[in-house]
Image (cartoon, rainbow, N blue to C red; front, side):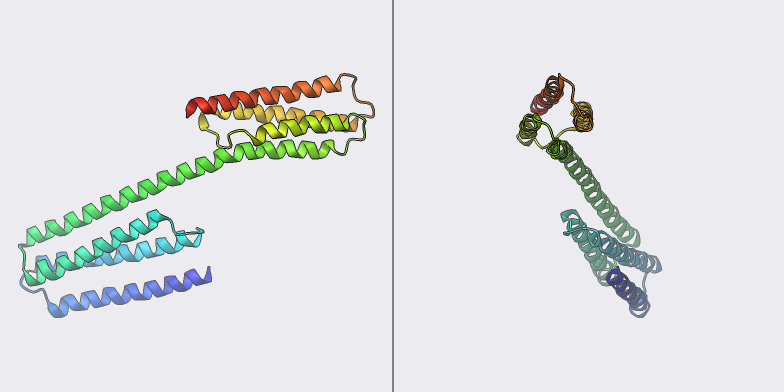
Length: 248
């Protein structure tokens, strides 16, 4: 955080110096034969410098929160560099050297600004969509991991059961865990309802196992109840995998 503040101070100082230098150059060189063209150059140059300064601050804030520099950010920096170079080239060549007609020159600078804004906006939109898709992919992969963690937790609880049927219960949960391990890890928003059913079924299995540990004497049909709950989860898991396969 302190490093970013230091960089912000540097960039602000450089920006202020560049603005002063730009204004001084316009006064000294005095692109004098057309006041209108000089004003256009001043606005175009200051706009480009301000855009670079703002993008630099945005870069600092974004990279500071990211493990690596996003490619979209690099593309945006390239657009900013090209835009700034074209603006300075136009001011030097078209205004000062060639003395282009004022309205043609203003139109050219405005076109450069509009095209650069569109390009930067397109890159930003692409980056936003890519970020949303990446988040969806992360969320989709998280669902199965959460299910597997819950099954593993139930297995850990079952190991503490002091009952002759503990080994049978443990094996049943291990088999169920294996089915999750070999399922498609990436989910899809279209099957979130099925994912929610699995979550509810796992919750029922968890409560059932906890109840077995609490009871001094488990019900006579505890095996059938446990197998029924495990099979319902396995059946819904198979349905989930079929639905995923149909979406691909």
